[in-house]
Amino acid sequence: MTRTMPQDPMILSLIQQAKRASFSRRNMLQGAGIGAATLALAACSTGGASAKPTAAADKSSTNKSLNWDNWAAYLDEDDSGKTHPTLAAFEKKTGIKVKYDVAVDDNNTYYGKVKGQLALGQDIGADLVCLTDWMVSRLINLGYTQEFDLSKIPNAKNLTPALQNPDFDPGRKKSLPWQGGFAGICWNKAKVPGGLKSVEDLWDSSLKGRVGVLSEMRDTMGLIMMQQGVDVSGKWSDDEFNTALDVFKKQVNDGQIRNIKGNAYLEDLKSEDTLAAICWSGDITVINAEAGDKWEFAIPTGGGTLWNDNFIIPIGSQKKSAGEDLINYYYEPEVAAEVAAWVNYITPVEGAKEAMMNIDPQLAENQLIFPNEATLATTKVFRTLTSAEESKYGASFQSVLLGS
Image (cartoon, rainbow, N blue to C red; front, side):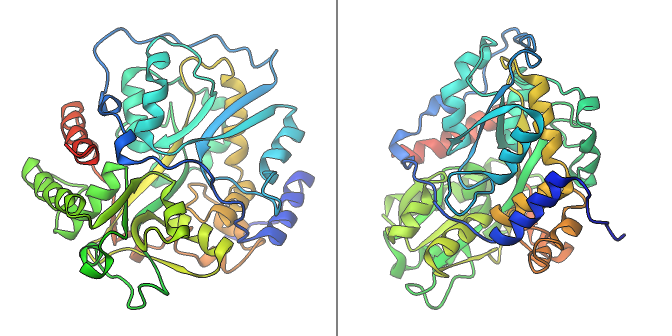
C-alpha cells in the first residue's frame, strides 16, 4: 500500500531534518565501562514473594515534565550531538518537558540500582525506562510496572503483529517495544583482515587478550550455545547451558576474553583495546559513522540472538499519562522512521518502512532496520526463563565475571 506524505507540519519538519541528518551518528557514548569486577550477584535476584506495590497517583495534568532513562546511542541526534530532534518536536507539540538520560548500560546493573525503590513503590527518578524483554518480564511479574491506558496510546495499533502478544505481557498492557536488534560478532577490519564467521573464530590465538563480550548473559551465552547447535528459543537444560559456560569460563581464565561490558564495549573497540567482540548490531553503525568504516558486523554461522527493548512506566512514577503521550508519539510511523534512520535498530512500528522511503530509500532496505524473513531465519529469541532458572543461570554467569 502506498503511504501518502503526512500533512502535519511537525512531521514534515522532522522528515526534512532526517533527510539532512540520515546516517549521522556522532558524539558517541562517553559513559564509564562496566567491568566484570563491578557486577553484583545481587542484581540476579528476582525478588521474593512480598506483596506487590501500589501504583502512584498520576499528576501529569499539573506537572508537565517527564524523565526518560534509556541506553546510549538510542535516540536521534542533530550534528552537534546536543539535541534530539524528535524529542524536541514532542516537547514543542505537547508542552511536556522531557529529561532524557543515558542511564542504562546493562539491564542487571540498572535493576540493581532501582530494585529497592521499586519494591517499595517509590519513584526511581524515571517515568519511562527502556529495558530488554527478559528484564521487563521480571518487572511485570514482580508488579513493578504500571498498566497502560491503551486508549491514550491509539498509535499502539501500529505495533507489528509479531510483537503484540509476548508471553510476558499478552496484549501489551504494560510494555511496548522501543527498538529491537541482533547480537552477533564484529571485528576491526584492518586488524582482522580475514574477518570472522563464527563465535569460535573469537577464540583464535591471534586474538588472545583482544576479545570483548557482552555482560548480557542471554547474548553472550546465547551465541556460544547457538554455535554449539543449541536452539536457544526451544527446550534445553542445564547440560547445554553448562557446556557453553565451560567454554566461556575457559576463554576468560585463559585471557582470551579481555573485556566483559555493557554498552561501554564500544569504547574498547574504538581504542583498539579489543579487536573483535560479541556485540549489538546497530552499535557498529555508530562507531563506523564517527570514526570511518573500520568495523564490520555479522550474524555468526551458528546464528544470532534477536531481542527487543521495551518502554515501561515504573510503579512509582507520577507521570503515567505524560509517558503514554510520549509512547504514542514515537509510534507515529514518520517519527519511528526518523529514529530508525539514526539508531539503525529494528523499528517495531508498522508503516515506518514506507515512511523511511521519504528519508533515505537505501535505509528502507537495510537488514539491520527492516530485516526480511531470510535474515530473521538466522536468529533466535532466547527463551523465557523461569525464576529458578534465571537465578541459577544468572548466578553461574556472574560468577565467571567475578572470577570465582
